[in-house]
Picture 1 (cartoon, one colour):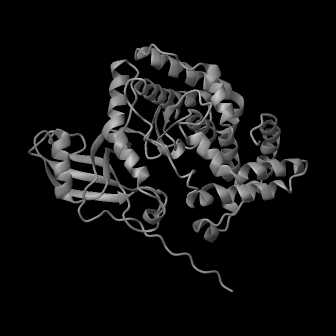
Picture 2 (cartoon, one colour):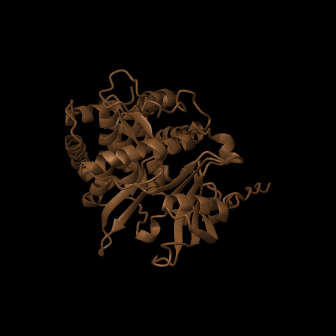
Picture 3 (tube, one colour):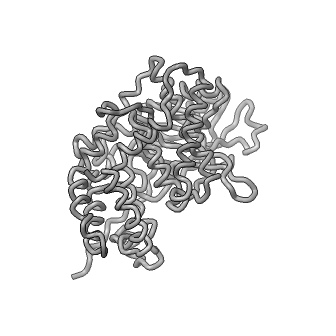
Amino acid sequence: MAETAQPEIKPATPPEWLNSAYLETVLRKSEGDKELHVTGIESTPVGKPGEYLASQLFRVTVHCQGAGRTGDTDGGSKKLVVKIQPDKGIVADTMDATLFKNELKMYGEFLPKMERLLADNERPLALPRCVHISEVPQPIIILEDLAPAGWKGHDLIESFEEVKPIAIAIARFHAATFYLSKNKTDFEEFQTDLFQKKHPVLEWMFGNNLKAFTESLRTWHGCEQYVEPFERSFADYCDRLHSIYSCKTAGRLYNVLNHGDFHAKNLLHQFNDEGGIVDSRFLDFQACCWSTPAIDLYYLLNNIVHYKVKAAHKEEILAFYHAEFTGTLKAVGYLGYIPTMLDLQIELLRNGFLDILHYTCFLQFRFIDFTKIDPEKLATGQVGNAGLENEDYRTLMKSLIPGYVHKGLLE
């Protein structure tokens, strides 16, 4: 019997209200130019159809005329990135509005406060300039497009030196929120209940991959005794993740505001003439979460840094991060107790299930040779679990699994 054809996902188109008149009003306010006139706009979707779960993204070029426009090096045009909360379709039906509301709050209130604190104390944190936010006629965030200034994406980081700009940025982000939390800024509203409610999307994101891993593990020579501990720990993965992401978990030493979705696609970099990364900044604040710093640090170690760099430099990366975190708190004048390196290591150990989750759910896909996948299956996402069969992946996991067991991370 022939396979059922997959429905085509068409590129998103901007809503009708996102027109010249709307953008003219926005830019007159943000540019402080009442004489600015929009003469035309061009827009293209960002990413592949369906790639972004909680937003519809567009790159928009706005052609302008008005006072101060004639000297612009870009010929009087403004490059913007527009993020709109979906109001219909599969994405809108699957995800609640919390993610987009989080980002509205971040750009509207919290990020400006953090930027001011850090800039005033010579520890600047570079973030995209927010041009406009609004909840009507539809929740929308408009940012400056960083691409014209040379900011680019990059895959996994493959050297310790290139990790440093990223570690600096996230350490300053964490330190600013830690300081502000001690000075009448409440971040506890940034919490996720997806894990507590066992949201159905989690089975798609984690459950299926965890089941596939344990089934594959049964076939790995010498790993038979580890199947049962993995099955037991995976059976309540939602509860374990809720404990990690909750700010009120018993025994927690300290919380920071985590970016929460800290991976390569949410980073942009500046490069030197040799192609090396010299500066980094992160985007997309929809998944911010007030909880253990282990969340962002495991993302840094597992989803931004190549696993070989992690193996060679894990402790150096953590020490570099902690030094910047500590230095930033001192620079902004914090006089209270500063979490020590031991505190940080305890948080990482207590929340080590997240490390296991990343390596069993996500890392396997780095070992798939996509050139050997049937093009039709690749186009429809039907790549199966080829990474679990890769001998290099199996060798890596076999070297790590005893450590997971001996540290008690599967109990």
